[in-house]
Length: 222
Ligand code: AMP
Image 1 (tube, helix red, strand yellow):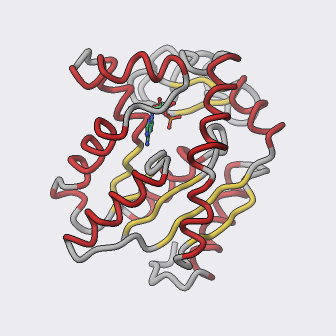
Image 2 (spheres, rainbow, N blue to C red):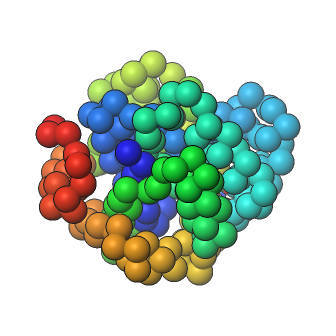
């Protein structure tokens, strides 16, 4: 089962994708997390991605596509995966479709999490992340149990370097210009499920589960 989470930066894709992946026992592939890990480990990939990420721009397709397809070709993805943050433009979406077809596989559903621009800005400007395990937090919506520390691994929480006002503006521009057209792309294939992303994490989770059920996906009961 291959499910894509689509939505603007700050829509809550990462949080919902991680929860669903745990519940369905599928691998969660977040392209942004893969880049941040590479950056932290100072690998060649991290060095290549750094300047684009800092500016809120997309990392070039050839780098991104190779990274995600490599991850998807590992044995733990054989039965499926939840993709979050990829694809982010038409070229990536088409390449992904072609790569899956070659393995007699296909995307099952695309969950589009819709959130107003005002709410996106509120969420992004109060967002914190664990640099070690990538767990996301929000000052008021989902604060850590101990202020400034990750619940899972106790690392010190940080602001993402691309959550500055300037980079947020750029990331939203990039999203509307390059990623939002994917809503139509997947709508035409009949795979798109639109979910209202406003409200608490749990409310949105329930809407995601219900959309997947009503989307007639052969989907295990949660
Ligand atoms: P995210 O954590 O999904 O917000 O991604 C953080 C940054 O990683 C983005 O602003 C891009 O610079 C880069 N990135 C993540 N996914 C992609 C992608 N599919 N294509 C190009 N760049 C990406």
